[in-house]
Structure formats: C-alpha cells, structure tokens
Image (cartoon, rainbow, N blue to C red; front, side, top):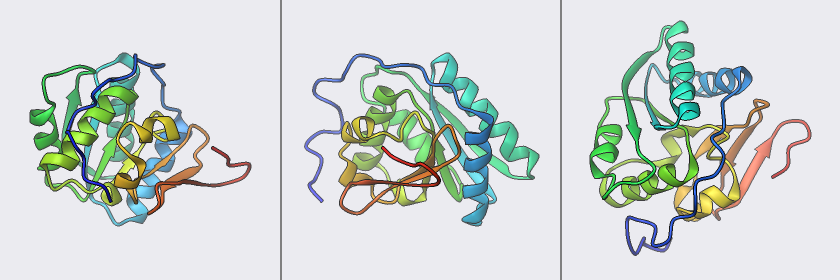
Length: 174
C-alpha cells in the first residue's frame, strides 16, 4: 500500500449529488452490522440535508434493534484539516463505524482518518453515497481494503485488497 502523501486532497472535485438513503439500504446496513456482532456503532456523515437524514435514519433503525450509537459525528465539505471530526469519530467506543457522504467531505475525512487515527476500513460500513469507484479513488481504493457497504437496493459492496469493488446480489454491477 502506498503511503498517503498528504491527509488532504490537493484538488477536491466540485460537490456531487446529495444522495438520499433508502429504507432498504438502511435495513441492509443494520443487517451487516448485526452480522458482524456489533452492539455499538459510531455514525459519521456530511452536513448536507441528505447526509444528515441518512445519519438520522441509521440511528433510528439501529436503536430500534436495541443497538447503541456511541457517537454521531458530522463533518463539513470544506475544512482546514478535518482532524477534530476524524478523532471524535475514530475514538468512539464502537464495534463498527458507519459512514455516509457526500463524497468530497467523506474522502477528506477518510484521508485524515487514515493519516491520523487508528480507524480501520475493514471495521467500517458505508452507504451508497460512498460506494462507487470515483468516490473511493479520491482516497485511494487500495487504502480502503475491507470497507463494506450497501447500495440503494440493499446489495452489498466491498473494497478488495487490490482496490477493486465487488458487489453481491442480483444484477449487481459497478
């Protein structure tokens, strides 16, 4: 794995669409967390309306199953370093980290997490707002091995050791 040369993107892309989560996506994320034996999760999101709504939906669904939300952290699309948000998120006493977009702010936080904390992608679940090759490339997909998530239809995607994205489920393609 190549080391990051900087925790921040040199030339961040313009903001993309603010993707809303679906009920199916949220249910699949909760199912993945439960399948991994999680009792407590940390939720991280951007501050756009769709990202905040996604974090709220995940919180409600997780708590409805008896789960504990250790922390909810939000981050802006632009910031000086994202270090405070990264530390708050990574230091939470959680079994699993759960993340949602939008993509540029997420990529900046993920880069900071890799650079400055003990965060591990293989202990992280993410929404469809993150699970596309272009978004993962903002961080460097090879650095995200094991990151797993769901798409809007509830199909599961995982970043492989070589940085590829595998999707399971009927008609899955990326």
